[in-house]
Length: 271
Image (tube, rainbow, N blue to C red; front, side):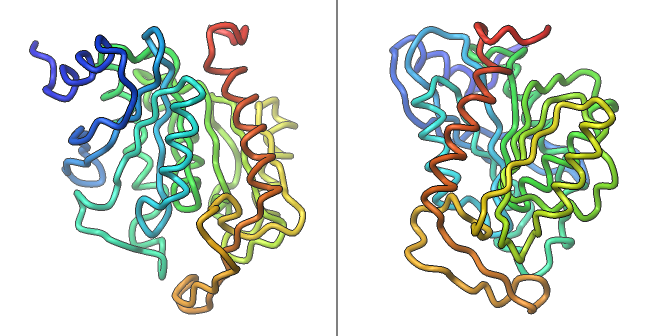
């Protein structure tokens, strides 16, 4: 079987020792209906194969914070696949009502992207994880509960920034999960996620919830100069997004430690 053109491009880039986003990756998905999604892959410098993260944007599409995290991960030694779940489906923004394309239906993107990454030279198919923001974090949670169904895909680490936890009664995932939450989040309140994490730990799952005092939704979005009221959120009830540098800095430390423990070869993770 011939490799995809994008895979050949990645191989050439790795051989040249370059680092940077590689455009025009195309990820086919079959659920909830057939579509072709686009993605950019950020490749780190160093010796392949690399651990890789699938990055899932929020309800307004790929934001500047997601791209900043892709570059941060690249510098940390990870390949980062920034997946556009909307363009190939004709969406631009669903912030007024996220249920138009909920975390459950979108969760199939995670497994399709993981399968795609596993075909690329220079990517370690045994060290793939997922990070999602807001709607993308909701998608991470729902994907975790479908892990037992997708036996051909093994995710090693899940990170969810301020996800919606209101429709996840229990955690049935196989992968360790880190949730990073804002105490003053009035879009996706932290309490449901904190309760989910506590119940999951009692059942023996590796789930951690970190709640940042005083932080709002979008606390890692450094391009936000002052708090912004998103009037269309929650079907017109509105919600606030605001940058919090202390929460952002600590989230970087937590993500670094979490990924090193579960995705780096020297981490002592279980195989």
